Image (tube, rainbow, N blue to C red; front, top):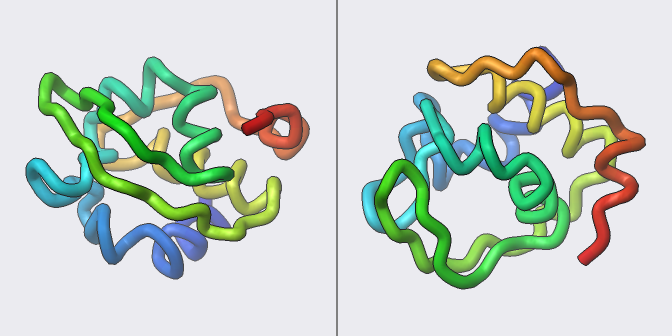
Length: 105
């Protein structure tokens, strides 16, 4: 969790904010996020390779671009474990570096 919080603070906090709530209609929330919690593979892929195109998070449409962050697989696993266990999210199945390594573009 500590390593994931560090990655979040260095790469994600600008858009998704310290509280994980994002910016309405611009950057989706990670806090209490149905997308994050039900679309595990897509969420990992977005962090690993970037995201573009419309997604729906908590009933709200988002259509912005998230550039690839250049993170290593272990950093992606760490930040995913942090965000899926913060701000009202709870994930009892930890994301591993091996799981992240198997995600293809």
